[in-house]
Amino acid sequence: MSTRAAAPLPALWEDLTFLSPLSEQRADAQAAWLAEGLGPGTVLDVGCGWGELLLRVLERAPSARAVGVDVEPLRVQEAGRRAAARGLGGRARFVTGDASGEVRDRLPPVVDALVVSGSSQVWGPPVEEGRPLDYGAALAAVRAHVRRGARVLYADAIWSRPPTPAAVAPLSGRDDEFVTLHELVELAVGHGFAVVAFGESSLEEWDAFESGFGAGVARWLDRHGAAHPEAGAVAARAADQRAAYLQGYRGVLGYAHLQLLAV
Ligand SMILES: C[S@@+](CC[C@H](N)C(=O)[O-])C[C@H]1O[C@@H](n2cnc3c(N)ncnc32)[C@H](O)[C@@H]1O
Image (cartoon, rainbow, N blue to C red; front, side):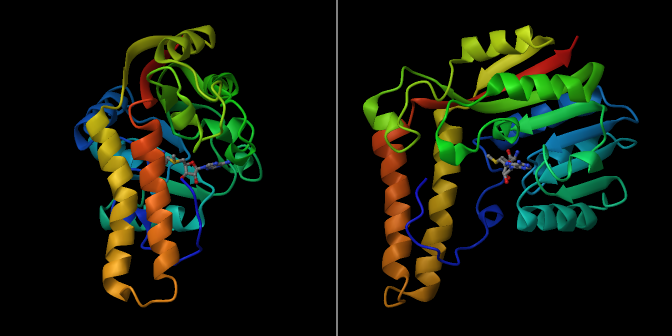
C-alpha cells in the first residue's frame, strides 16, 4: 500500500465497512458470538478503527459496555459519531492514542471480551520497520488484559500460501513477516487460549477490501477531473496499490480470524 502523494482523498470509511477484509456476514457472526458471552460486561477493541465491529457487539448485548482505542484521531471521531447516531453513546467510550503507550492507563485493565483485528503491531515493532509481525507479544498482552473465560476475537495477516517474490516485494520484502494459519493457531494455544473457531478471509472479502481503497480514488478523480494538479499523483497511488495486490500478494497474503477463549 504505497503513498506517492499526500492528496485529500475521501475518508476510508466512506467506501469500506471495516479496515480489514471482513464481510458483513462474518462480522455479524463474530459480533453475535462476542455478545453472547458478554452479559453486563465490558468489551475492549484495540485498534478499533471507526468502531463498527464494537458497535455491532453493543447492539446485540443490551447491558454491555464497550471501550475502543485507536491511534488515528479521525477514525476515533467517526466511531463516536456512529455510536451517538445509533443511540449507543452512553455505553461506548472511545480513546485516541497509542494503546500500549500514552493512553494505556485510560483503558480498563481487565475486560470480559476483547477484539484485536489487524492491530497486533500495537505490541510489536512499527509496521514501517518491516520486521516480522510479533503475534506472540500481541497474544500475551491480550491474555493479560482479559479475565479467565473471556471471549477474544483475534484477527491478523498470515500467509495463505508460501510467499512468492512478487507477493513480498510490495510488503516488507521478507518471507518471515507472517506465519501460516496453523502456526498462528498453535501460538494462540501456547499463550493461554482455547481455540473455539479458526478461519481466514475469502478471496471475495479480500477483493472487496482492496477495491474499497480504489473506490475513493475513483470518486476523487471524478469530482476533481484529470486537470487537477494532483490528479496524476492520485491515479498513480491507486495504480501502485492495484499492482501490489493484483500482481503481488492476491491469494498469498491471507487474513486469519480466531475465536478464542481465555483459559
Ligand atoms: C488494519 S486496521 C484495523 C481496524 C479495525 N480493527 C478493523 O478491522 O476495521 C488497524 C488499526 O489499528 C490502529 N493502530 C495501529 N497502531 C496502534 C496503536 N499503537 N494504538 C492504537 N491503535 C493503533 C490503526 O490506526 C488502525 O485503525
